[in-house]
Image (cartoon, rainbow, N blue to C red):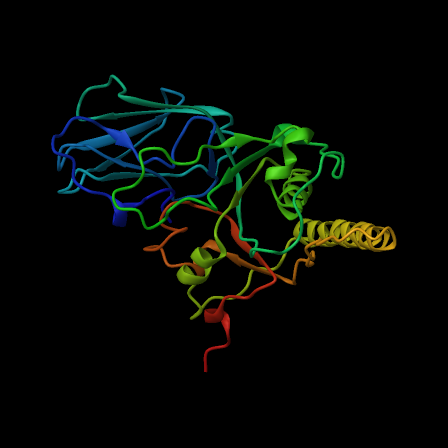
Length: 296
C-alpha cells in the first residue's frame, strides 16, 4: 500500500526538474515498517528514474516517473536490524548521484489511525495520564485536513513529537491512552483522521476485523474511566450551581463506544487514508463502518 500517494489529487507541473514530495511527507515523520512502504511526489521528468537511499548510502530503491511526472518508490523496511530509526532518506532523479531532496529524523514504527466521532469522550487533560514513554510517541492530526482538495494544499499538517503535559488538551483522551499503551512495547504513531474518511474507504468483501491487541483494549478501558470521572465532576458542578441558584449549561460527555479495528488491507488503495498512508490498523470508537456488515 502506498504511504502518502495522493495520486488522485495531483496536477502536472508546468515544468520538469522540480522534484518534490507530496505535502504529507516531512521531517520528523513516521513510516510504517512494511514491505511496501511508499515515498511519493511529482515534478520528475516523465520516464525518468527516481531513487531513494537510506541514510544517504547503502540500500537504494528506485522507480520510473509516469507521464505526469508523478513518482512513487516502494521501500521494504521490515528488517529492523538493517534499517534503524530515526534515520534519513535522500531522494534524487536520473543518473546524478547528488540527492535533490532529504527527509531527516524519520522514525520507522507502527502507525495507527484513529477516528473519534464528534462529541465522544473528552479532551486529554494535564496530569490526567502519566506518559511513561513520550520519546516513543509521534502524532499527526489530519482531522481538519481537506482530503478532497485538488491540487493539494501547499502546507499539510506536520508530524509532532508527543506534546508536553500542558499541551495535551488538543488531543482526545483516547488518542493519548492509545499512544501510551502501544508505546510500552515499541515506537508508535497515532494519526487522528475524520471518521467519514475511514467509512468511505472501507471495503467489506473478503476482509475480517483484525484481532484487537490488548494495548488497544486497555487504552479504551482507561479512556472511558476518565470519561466517567469527568461526568461525575460535571454532575457535581451542576448540582452545586443549581443549589446556589446559578443558571448553568454544562454539555454532556459521552463514553467511547465499542472499538472496531481493521488492518490496512480492509481499505481501498485508491482512496484515503490508504492513498496517503501505510499503516498497521485503523480504529473507530463507537461506530462500525456501514460496509462492514456481513456480506450474503
